[in-house]
Each structure stands twice: as structure tokens, then as C-alpha cells.
Image (cartoon, rainbow, N blue to C red; front, side, top):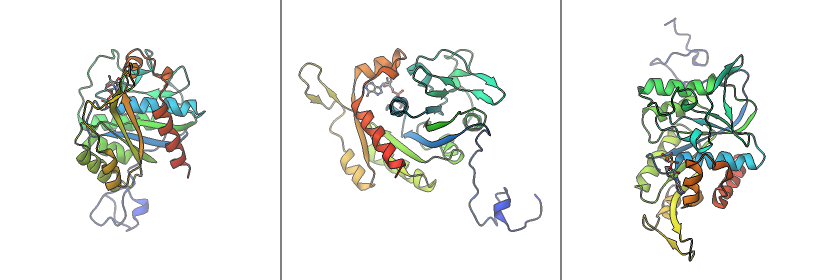
Length: 277
Ligand code: ADP
């Protein structure tokens, strides 16, 4: 360590006399341009975080924006499959090139780099976090308006490092009714507050099931407590997405771009207005 000048703004050391927080944000690739970055978080896996990430990118793309997805959920990457992407990412002079979907969404995921998409990613935390940082700094993101980051679930070491490394403009919390919603929301809220990232709102996924024959709503996971929780933490409810077998079928067959989802469309419009006001 060189001699301390007491000017923390020009020093990267994290020493005991540091008097201002260190900026740990990774540098974006010099050729890239990304206007807004939105993290999609959840307390645990399987609640529909990747589905919501994909739907938001699809809705923003339909609104005329250049959307992108950075798939940071490295141990459970499901984004390429939802978009039916089979190609592998290639390099160029400007950096690693994301794969562009039919409707023009740019995607980077570890599955686009693995030889076999079924190969497991058995990496330790620092390697996982390092890879996500590279997805930000080494990929050529060409003129992206809105980037959606599919975060790893939970509030552990890897999501924490990613939180610090990417310049998030806001996060969306995804929950399902059967989760211990209050505790999970509180953890996500606290993490976002500690990282100084605004919470754009909460999306409850698998809220209910609408009978295709009679249209009656059923609540297989019990009645939701979302309203009370949103009020308690002053968070906006962006959407309640019903269980929709067409949704999972579209994800499984790589056709998420053809999904019609009015609730997700509404949520995207709310996010657009929150970020532009
Ligand atoms: P996560 O990213 O939180 O692990 P996923 O988005 O991968 O969760 O969703 C888990 C599974 O649930 C997937 O098979 C997905 O297609 C399905 N799924 C998610 N949301 C819905 C929904 N609203 N209706 C029907 N199936 C859904």
C-alpha cells in the first residue's frame, strides 16, 4: 500500500481510515451504452423470477425500446431456453457479442458460453460473481435502453456482490403467495436500502388460477397478504400474475416473445413511468 494521502476519492484501498464509501461498480465496456439497469430479485428459486425478467424485456421491446437481459442467475440459467436460443455467443473486437432474439432483445447468459447447456455450473461464489461482472464489462451492449438483470435468488454473497458491481437504477421483487412473503420482502427491502438502490415495486407471481371454463379465480396457495405487506414497507404493487399454463408452455418451447400478458404489460408501463419521473 502506498503512503496515505487522506484523499479517498483517488484511492482504491479499503483501509481503516477510509472516510467515504468505496465505489465498487464495475466499468462498462468502452463501446457499450446501457441507459437503465433493473435487477429482478426473489427470496428463493422457482417463484418465477426468470419468467418475470423475460416478460419485462418482451414488454419493453414491444413498447419500442432496445431491451437486454443479463442472466446473472448462473446456476439456474433459464433465459435462453425461454427465447428458444440455441446459438453460442461469439467474440468480436468490441467484446463478447450477446445473442439477439427474434424481436431484437440482446441476451447474455452462461448457457450461451457452455459447450452443453445441460453442463452444471459448479463454481464457487467469487467465480460466479466474477463472471457476472464480466457480463457487464466484457460484453458489447450496443445502445441498450433497458437492461433487465435476472439476479441469483436470495440475499447471499453472490447477489450481494452483483448488487455492488452493477449500477442498478432499481429493483423489482418477485414473490409467490406461498412464500414467507413478509420476511423475504423485508430482507430484499433491507438489502436494497443498504445498497442505496430504489425498489420499483413488487410482482406477485402465481397469484391465482383462473378456471378456463367458468372464469372463477382459485387461490391454490391461499389468499395473498400482498396488500398489507406492500403497505407496511411502502412498496408499489406492480402486478399480480395468475398461474397461466400458456406461460409455462411458451417458456418451455422458447416462445416467450409471443406471449400475451396484460398484467405484465401494465407492470412494464408502471416501471417505465417510475424510471422516467
Ligand atoms: P425462478 O427464476 O424464480 O427460479 P422461473 O421463472 O424459472 O423461476 O419459473 C419456474 C417455473 O414456473 C418455470 O417452469 C416457469 O415456466 C413456471 N412459471 C413461472 N411463472 C408462471 C406462471 N405465472 N404461470 C405458469 N407457470 C409459471
